[in-house]
Image (cartoon, one colour):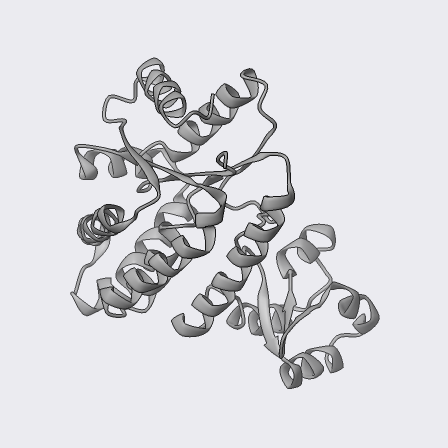
Length: 281
């Protein structure tokens, strides 16, 4: 079976977005029908970005506090005993749809704020739905992160749960997507502190402050007393160690792309050779 999915992973600042975009351009230039989903895409078929999950009773309570309940009902999607609400899409369409109090409450139900066990269950269901759909589609999907990054960010960084649970979750996702004959392209950097600080200096202040707070004031970072930029780098080092441990355990097709020089032509050549070696082009 031909490959239906290529996943590009790596740490912040490694060059994931550039790599995924270049990969997409290469396969399209080879007349391969493909679709690229970068991090943060609200329409991502295997990820929940800006989506909240409510129990039926919580959903009823939300409806009772919103005057536009009929419109809200049309946005909600029932999944088992839960209602999923793509609240960020709603806000993009109408920034005044929710009151400040409602939005604060909704954010507490964001799928990336849920306990890891509940988040992992919803994530696995989403991956399974995508896999069945992709099997029927005549296209190659290209994802920037979400396969390794999300489980580690939520499991290790946010909740600080035992690494074996994170590993088990990723391996369970691997079993789900195996039908798609996937390829994992891991973008690596020799000097993690340098590459992250480069990204840190290039990103907006809001991103910088939010990233450091997320990595140092909860889960693993808080437990190990890491603070500030240097502490964030230490957490990232541990995240990379665990990602590489998982990488070695994965049995799907995979390739380690070294992007330490940020040389676009060299990276493009590596991508092209990799795609050819896996008979994608």
